[in-house]
Image (tube, rainbow, N blue to C red; front, side, top):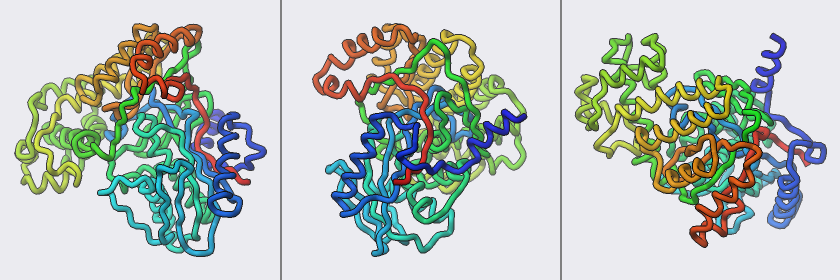
Length: 469
């Protein structure tokens, strides 16, 4: 019981606030970046920052595209992160700049904050976290801030650069205005806040960035959020390999990411009706269908085969299945970015969700590296064949990783580009990296010049924090 209470306290506690000079969690590279960011802030703002917020990216080991259907996932935080240096100003303005000059500085009133989700503007992610936190706190008189951002999570890599940015911005707003929330509450706030930029994620990315613990993965469950440490395999190493095909959830939301969300929602509504679930109209997640039906995940796969057509559904088909009008489908099932979509694959999406949720449980309980690898391979196949969120480069790279000796390899993140994660024998890592470098990155000069940041071994790192200076 004491051990369970200790584990629970780590996720229910507030994000740590520690003196940078006394912190022992940072790598030498991260500490050097903090120093460079402090200098960049001084140059841009004419004074030293008061504090630095940090939020890490993540790699999802297994459990893709199921968090927004209510199912548990198993990610871990990585070393790559977002750092934001901050100092208050007396002008009631929010001044946001970036150490990378390709990102333009923005200046605006510190409240209220408007976000135009029709524009792909880099500061929207900061504003989403900032606004979401302050709205949750009912803080309508925030102080003015100067902030300088430094991010090294590659954008579009499937390693959650956008969510890390949202989390880091929420930390800025919270600490600057002397607010505090438990990690679980903060994760929920950040997941909701990211909807301001037009994507409809389920909460995994924000939760792991906030709650991560060094040396372990986290089995994260939702509604409500619970995070349980999951021991990582002995004798194995996780290797990330970025295809360098940028996967931008915002740009393709209507036809890719958000479309998958509403396909799952439509499947849940129809299955609830077919199974005569009470108050079926209130069902929005496939996980709710399973829970109310009282069936196992494997039973739900049979339910999908029985009740959902393998043919695409039109908006009219969905309306007929639910006994409502097309206008009601648009209003209650679809989202603004998907209302113009005409065809929806409900069978395959639901089949993936239930099978992937089972794989997460099996992976968590697996006792051998070979079993874990097999489950990762099965996950990729399902993402490719049933969720249709892979791409040729992801398929090529995962196949190459298996040929190079990985126990298993799969896409990680939303897909349609981005990164792969492979489970590799610890003693064979150097040989594995050499084979992947030769087989994928040396095939093009553009890939080869980015190999150092695209191909690397990773280990589970700590979650978000605030460093005082």
